[in-house]
Length: 338
Length: 61
Image 1 (cartoon, rainbow over the protein chains, first blue to last red):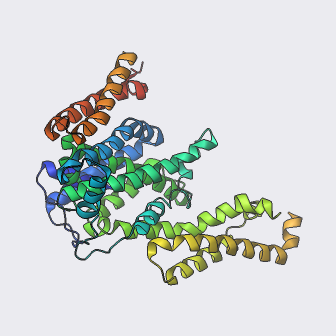
Image 2 (cartoon, rainbow over the protein chains, first blue to last red):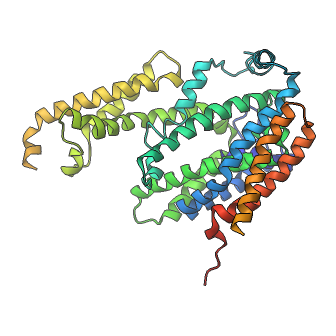
Image 3 (cartoon, each protein chain N blue to C red):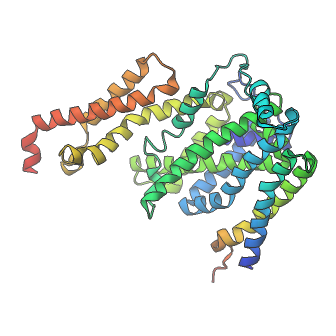
């Protein structure tokens, strides 16, 4: 998302956005702008959760509107729309016409639906949201994950589809938003990039801090920010974002299944919860085996990457349950002694 | 001050929401939509923090 923001900042300085086939940065200007955006994202993340939420609170309702407004305002550019059938005709012939950009993969509606689910997988199914939802005062705060998925992705993707078609399918988020909503659009892309990257940066900081407990959180976040900013300079990363997001969602998925089973299913089948913590063990062997085996099964499933997590998740749940049951049978004395 | 900033930001967000539909229905041109949308956006960005995150503007003793 740092790179996405950089495309909008680059517009102001006439810096070309890297092509879909580029891996290395295409100009010094691109690197400078990406570094600049990376510094801002890292600084806000360093300020902590409170500043992060204040920043998002002000900008998110407006960014959401920019997406919808841009798409609606651009629709008449495709031709006269006097009825729903006109709209449908334009949608199927000029916006989502099935023509694939050379070198890119063709997606069906199912790919889009599953990816919209998948790209937030790390947040809800994989439980990354817990980094922020731990502050929730009510259980209903969990629905915010649904807002992110359904509005943040389904709606944003539909609107982006309209806007990209209006800029002759040039894959430049900054140019797309500038055409649709002027300077406000370009600014919205910068803000959207920052607000999306920030919570992740904050979570990364928290995660690394568990490995380096002697480091202060700001120092850990700074290290994560520097690493992320350097990676963002390489278009090879952000132009392959879909695959990266899918893979990182997939890698975390079995652990999300393990936590779900431990918390919700174990009480139903009378298996003691949080056994490993109570026994003060370093490793949860059933969880470790579940993680490895699920990833192995997912890697050989003969279906598209975007669809693999769902059977994988069900497999991980069943496997963890069986493995824990077997371990319990083998080590029953140990638990009862504790 | 708080009430004034709420009124300004709600109107600004309302203009941001309505103008694209007016363009879609051909009541206003695309250029007019761009102008109104950008001005309203500026008002939102300037007025919303005043009531949404008032702690930012509180002076420390």
